[in-house]
Length: 246
Length: 390
Image (tube, rainbow over all chains, first blue to last red; front, side, top):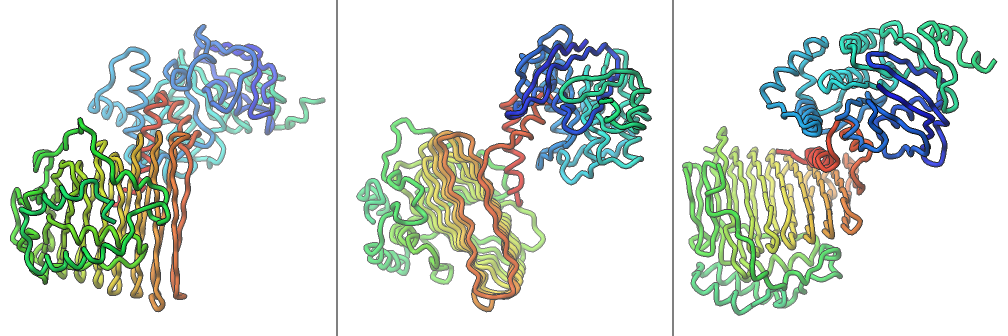
């Protein structure tokens, strides 16, 4: 489904990704771990199309389509979703309006019929119930006055509405207490399907206690230096990243 | 000063059919004499430094846009006060607590003089209005208005080629309550308003000047607030060739509150000046001024919020929050918050920013599938929402 081949990317003058390769199949969950500054978030930003990250080499194909040639909104409509590490606040724009605008923009891009207000409201009410979240979140301006946990939950909720094919969770566990972590993980697990894949970027193994990955990769100095199954995350938790240099 | 008007003789001729009371004619004659001592707006004047004042003299386009509003056709208000060249017309249900008098029938007791206390250069524009006024009205709201939720529209229905000089004198009685929406769309208008907001009165004013391309509006408003009076003003401005707005707020008793929100959208070649001076003459009053301005293409905006806290006006609370966004390389915004504090016990805060749309937020919207153009529109709506005070 996703094929990342020898990708190089700069943030400003600094080369961050230095020949990264990764293949992800449909329905797979891949965890990306690594020390600070390794390039984990840059990888998420490259896939989502952040303007300040410059790709200097390599290719990224999603369902055999060149992802790098697409604008961020086109990538979203093709099925890429980035759950931000620091979701931005948008005062004066409520979640309902924002989500409907986003969903209909994606539908327009794909040549599908736009969803009307009544059907959208029905769908949203059902999904927020399924995710065990409070529906007052819908009326509030996007992320404004949200706690850290609420912002992350809102990201997962957005994911449930937009139904992406590839969801990238950029340190979604950072700043969450245990209860919030469980809620977020539970939300993600509900969204796991045979045709939806996940890239979970995290520093810690604890998130992987709740979201079980099929593969764990260690990203260091802009490349994937080791891959394995869930046991690799446990090994890293015990021995730290220094162990990889030995 | 005579040079301010594009065709002086036409203005004079146009006024002949409007017969004003003797006392007002005498005031006009005095203002006419005073006018000789004032200069026309020019770049040496602070409030006109960033504006092309020569536009005031420009001819209107041969194929000018239609006014866009005809009497009360486009409003949903309960009662409409329509100002035209011919006088004042009231349409809809005029409640008993609302008294409206055409300037032709106005008595001296309904007249509330404007005392321009800051920016002396603005005196010229007010004197010009006083010398040439022909239209306007007195609006009196009695205390029986308390508890009502009626919306009154004040519509400037001018699309004439020449400048119109309008004066409105508005008095809200003790405990009175007024919701007034002011609508200007076209024409060339020099307007002065003088408000007296009574003790514990509650006023909401929504001033909407979304002008057609070649319209111009020069407006001077004076608000005097009595004890525990509450006033919320919302200004929504866009378009036109030039808009010059000057508000003067004077607290004349304690525990009054003034809240103002301005949304200035200046596009293409339009120019908007948004000036507000708040005089905390008396202690324990509160004022908050929020400006949100956007300039695109070759447009210009000048924002100036000033609060003057007099000696002895302790317990004053003052806030000025001016934020601006430039959407093109050629647009210009000048933003100036000012505090003059002559006493000790004051809480005063001011801030001003000028920048572009936040790129991280734009990317966030795009990453959810929203195209750039729509994302920018959402960001602009988000930005101006902070100034929506009523």
